[in-house]
Amino acid sequence: MKITKQKMIDYDSLGYSEANGWFAMCNWDRIKNIIKWGNRIITLFFSLITILIFNLFFDLKIETYSLDILIFILTFFLIYFLLIVPLHEMLHLVAYIPNIFSNKCHIMI
Image 1 (tube, rainbow, N blue to C red):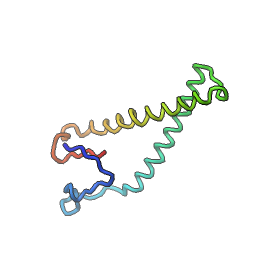
Image 2: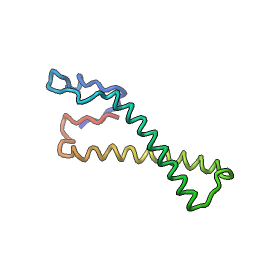
Image 3: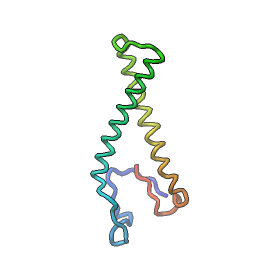
Image 4: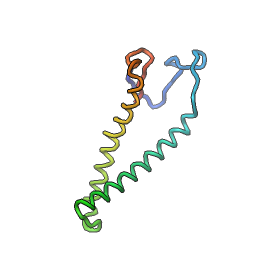
């Protein structure tokens, strides 16, 4: 298993080319765009739900506590991107546990 940091993955240098019997399953540029918008929508949705729940329990008025709400939203974004997203990505590895320590397993960050 190799963990590397790369912006663009060079599959040919890793040995994942059509000459070696590998082929692309789909157009990743289109999927990356869908994922980017999906993350934005999910983050907005959960932020709104969190604000509603926070207001329900603490009975806050948005006009008087706008700075507190802003700090709470920013904290939620940090929690989402630093905890939930990495945990979600690690769960993808569960399917590959038998092969995770092989030389063909590459984790790109």
